[in-house]
Length: 131
Image 1: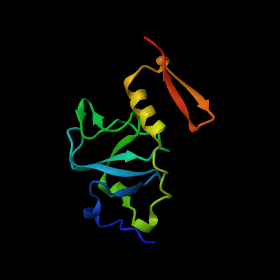
Image 2: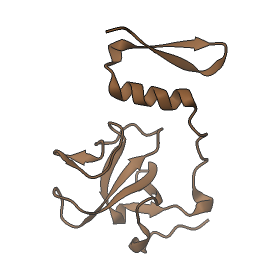
Image 3: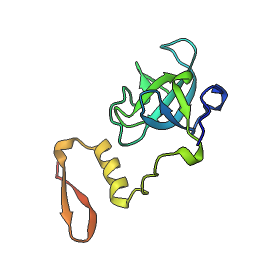
């Protein structure tokens, strides 16, 4: 296993990276930004990291799409690109319920959403209350 920490040209969109604080994610933006000089990378943090500072936008400027608190913007020098053999264990693909849940949670207020376990589904099903 080797990392390519010094060659910053390898930090490109869709690269898997580790931040200097150990969080991992995928590069979704590389370029100049309105809030800091230089070339900045926008990182979509892996689902286990919910301590980001952004949703892919800063002060109303959208750089990429991300769920709330799942994105950060850092200098490329603060990243280590992961080689294929270094990538953390991949997450299982999302189930249909997980994908539907994400869309519903983004579209409806929390008070209208309830979950319930069923014997036929390994993940909780969601229900919407009537408005």
